[in-house]
Structures are given as structure tokens and as C-alpha cells.
Length: 315
Ligand code: ATP
Image (cartoon, rainbow, N blue to C red):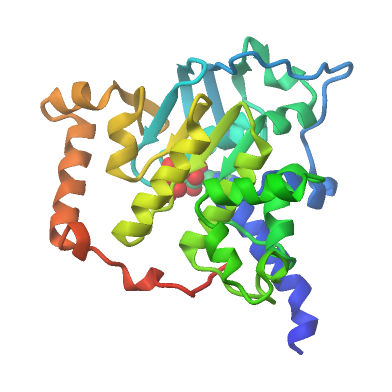
């Protein structure tokens, strides 16, 4: 009976993950070819990236025309810089990154990368330029090697190992029963949330995209894990144009610009220190709230989330 349900289940999981966390969108496009509404424009040229600056110019978008999710949103991310998007649930944060990946087309306005409207470039070239580190990585029922190599199919073994090293998971893999040949995923070794995130980081390092979309996990990892992951993440984002959907204080502080999204509009924007200065500001209030939560969680080294102790799994 289990076997009968497996494919359906798997598809359900995948579909939900995609819609919600833009997990592994490259693959999803193949899976949903039938429903695909996004096509290459006739004669579309490949995206040509230099520094990979991003521009959202007066973007208005709704999943259905009568319910607008983003209204006249404009911002830019200069080449190599990091912009963090914060805001309450449902504000449209994930929608922004889905639009950048051209999961959907904007209703009006335009999304540009290095001055090219993404609507007019070959989708394949667009997706090749973007690396995604999702909140929750879906692993393939395959070896850990395959799962990392997926970032650059045909990569040499030493490239895969190097990516794993930089993502701080190489040593861990060497401890698995069959090292890099260990099967992972739902039907193999179950990886913890932190480990899965590292796989995503390794994949992205291997892919070496010019542009990185990072959807930070909301659930707290323990402080040590957190620190190591931050280090690995900063390797992914270094010198790459990055958009982060931020939930953690650390990313927010260092971002070149923070966009506070509220009800489909950018309510506030600026650097951390600037936004904190605003009396009654949305950001200042969110910040105070986060600090309070940290304190009530016991802060620092004691802040261990038992839920995330390995080896757990969700997928
Ligand atoms: P969260 O922090 O909870 O992830 P978010 O700021 O990322 O929220 P979005 O996922 O961008 O919010 O959603 C913005 C709005 O669009 C919400 O009202 C949401 O219900 C709606 N929405 C999101 N995805 C879809 C979809 N596939 N179809 C229809 N409506 C959607």
C-alpha cells in the first residue's frame, strides 16, 4: 500500500515545496511542463550577465488579477550587493524571488538583470544565472554525491568535494556509511535540517551562479550550527548579487539595504542603523520584537532548539 501512495505523495510534497519555498525550481519546471504558462519570447536571446545587477521597476503582480500582491514595487540590487527583504507573513517576500526566477510574469512594470528584461531572455539562461538556497531543501532519493553534483551536472569529484568542504559538510559525509555513495532522501539516510541546508549551499557553490536567492530558514538551529551555516552562506554570497528573505538578525545587520515589505508595498528601506532610528518604524518594532524573542528563548549558547537535533528529517 505504501508503495502505491509513494509517487502521489512525492509529487504532493514536491509541489507544495515549490509553491511555498521555491525549492529547486529548475527541476519543477520540467515536472510541470503541462501547466507551464511561461514561455520564451519569440527570438529570445540568452541573458548576458556582467555584474548581475537586479532591478525591479514599478512591478505590480497578483496571482490572480483581482488580488494584487505587489503594487508598484521598485528597488535595485547593485552588482555584488546584498538586499534583505523582511516583513510580516504574506507581505509578498517570496513572491519577489519567484518573479525574479520568472516563475510568473509581472502584470505591469519589469524585472531587469543587467538591463535586460527577464521576460525577453531565454529562461534556461536566466535559471542558469541564479542559485537558490531554499528554506527547506528537497533531496533526491539518490547518493549524497548526486545531490551535490546536481548544482553542476558532470562536475568532477574533486569539485564536488571542494564544494562540500566549503559548505562545511565534507567531514560529515566521510562519516556516512558509504561516504559520498550513501543514499540520502526519503528512502535513504535522513539528514537534519542543518545538513540539508548545507547540501543546498554546496550545490549552489558548485553551480557558481552570478546571482543568489536565499530564503533563510525560519526555525532556529542551535547556535553553533547557526554560526557554521552563516560562514558557509557568506561564502555563497561573497561577491555575488544576493537577495535574502531574512529572518535572522545577523543577515539583516550586514545587508547593504533592507526592504521592509508590508501589504505589497515597500514600507521602509535603508540600512539597519538607519531603520532603527525611525521612531515608530515598522522595522524598529520588528527588531525590538526579535530581541525580545531571543531573550525569552534564553539567548546565546543555551538557545538550543531540540527540534532540530540530528538526525531528524522532514522533506
Ligand atoms: P511568508 O513569510 O509567510 O513566507 P511572504 O511574505 O513570503 O510570506 P508570499 O508567499 O509572497 O508572502 O505571499 C504573498 C501573498 O500571496 C499572500 O497573501 C499569499 O497568500 C499569496 N500567495 C502566495 N502564493 C500564492 C499562490 N501560488 N497562489 C495564490 N496566492 C498566493
